[in-house]
Amino acid sequence: MTSTDMRNLVCGATAGAVSRTAVSPLERLKILYQTQHVTGHKGSNAKYGSMSSSLRTIYRQEGFKGFYRGNGVNVMRVLPYTGTQFMCFDKYKKLLKGGDGTAPLASYEKLLVGASAGTTSVLVTYPLDLIRGRITVQGGGTAVKYTGMLDCLRKSVAEEGFFGLYRGMTANVIGIIPYVGVNYLVYETCKENAPIPEGRTTPAPHYLALCGGIAGTTGQTVAYPMDLLRRRFQVANEYRNVVHAVQTICKEEGVGGLYKGYGPNFIKTWPTIAIMFFVNDMMKQSDLINGVFGTA
Picture 1 (spheres, helix red, strand yellow):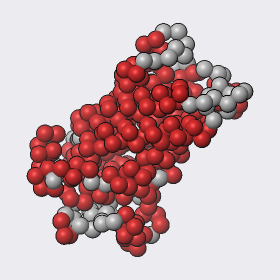
Picture 2: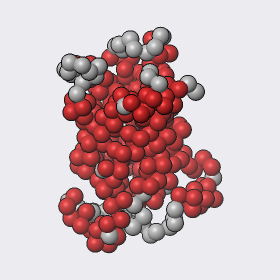
Picture 3: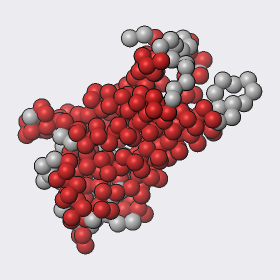
């Protein structure tokens, strides 16, 4: 691994951890919305309604720490996930274009490189995502079964075998290809067209944040149903495969069931992706990072 790879890994990992922690309450609420139908809270028995009442329910029953249940696992997952993603995006770009990777990519190339980087990061970190999902759901419609990451890992393997750690990965990979691909396509395109102030080599920070927000909401809207399926597979065993899951959800919950939790997800995606791309780009320009790893 080169110093540039390490630089991209560290910057991406830090950007991911900062962004996900910032929106952790909304992330947990999204997961609770996604899974309450399969955890005994459906129809008139739904535990979580409007966003404001749901947040109050979490606080009343679990206290302030309830907003961050599962965030430690999420950060542990996000560190290698976003680090690998940013590192692979740069690596795959250089493999595709040759040279130092500064040559501009066509739109389809941005989509291809982004999707490839996203798929690689999923393959590396999926078991952590599954563990995080199961811990996050606790207290929100299920009994508290796991005391922590290692306990969840041990019990999951004992009950389902090693490959149980990859339950729902097919839906995740199908969803991540358009999600991350569109993220990078939109972000890189917006960044290329943003004004660059005199004396800088990249757009101003507020433009980077704006580009990231647009990219995140666009990508998430395209891929959201597969994100919901991934979470359902992780916490329930009632679906045989992706097709059966889609058919069952549409029959029992309507087509809108594929977008349960989209409200808080939409609100949290803008700052999440905006912060992630912003922090990544700012770190790459920092004297500290360039002093340790050198410039790309």
